[in-house]
Image 1 (cartoon, rainbow, N blue to C red):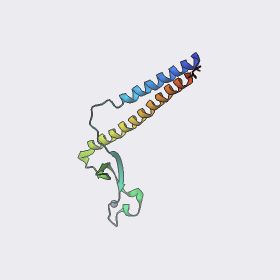
Image 2 (cartoon, rainbow, N blue to C red):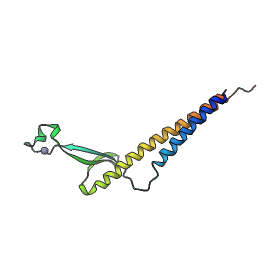
Image 3 (cartoon, rainbow, N blue to C red):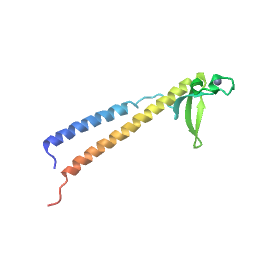
Length: 127
Ligand SMILES: [Zn+2]
């Protein structure tokens, strides 16, 4: 069974979850294009034997902006030219949107579980 106090607490919980769902969904409501990839920065060795990067990892060159993309089922790292930095931003935005979507899915599940809990507490056996 469920008493009025518990029900009131459940109402507050559901209100909080619903607000979070609305907020998370609104973080994905944009019209800008996205690039399906993972934007990161890398440091590299240049390959010259007498360069300081050859002996010390801390002296590697960079950071260079790269996008990790999946093509033909294989993951590839695409190095971007300076002119392509906008592409890097689009991939970074994509990652952000995917994070928000994952949070949204989790929060929807939380709402579902809370409602299920309320219903289960009210269920009685047929007399
Ligand atoms: Zn070097």
